[in-house]
Length: 285
Image 1 (cartoon, rainbow, N blue to C red):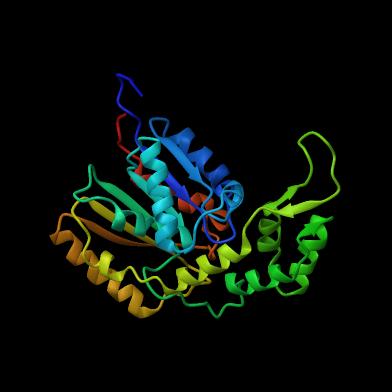
Image 2: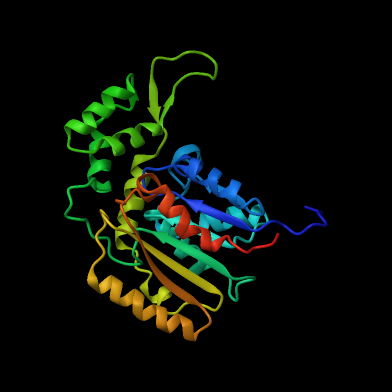
């Protein structure tokens, strides 16, 4: 505020269901080192991480979550140039641009990582499914005494080691800071998250993608071994949207990240970094 220098360009990174802003920490530090002209905003979405303690009014949907983030960037007086969302966060990023006032103040690049604009299809590759994960967490105690016990229980239930270890990052040690405590509690609002996931499955943003306003460039990234299988219909609609957008001064592009399942930033961070870098290169602060 009151600065004479222009604000640095900003990228906002959004996590998926049952995640938190910490999921993006390591990857974003790498982006910040490579592109020091940029600033990066990592957000805990409603019902997740440190935002879980802020009681938000229902409905807990893709659209209401997107509106939360729009209000946040407005309060921070930031106009993001890049929005990157993984899974649920991908649809949130699209919804943000759909809800933003038009015409946009400046162009924006949106990355929807392993999320189609429409129907969510579960892959047939035996990977973890968020709805099953939410259902299983409901059966677990609210107070936990061993993270390893939770990891073991998840693996016995058929979830992968990667997902089990990722999920227990949502456990926070109880008690005041600095004092040892033997128990942990979950850092999320599971009822709200369950509603959010249902909205993720039901939200359809195809109409927006097929009628992009000028200055919006949307990139879809499909993980090669994706849990949320991309149907041929999805790929055909995205390729058709590429042609439509080009005529309107907007853009749609499709990318494939090799050697990665749904957890793209964990499975192949180097490949993801190479693909995303195009949005940050050549920008002078």
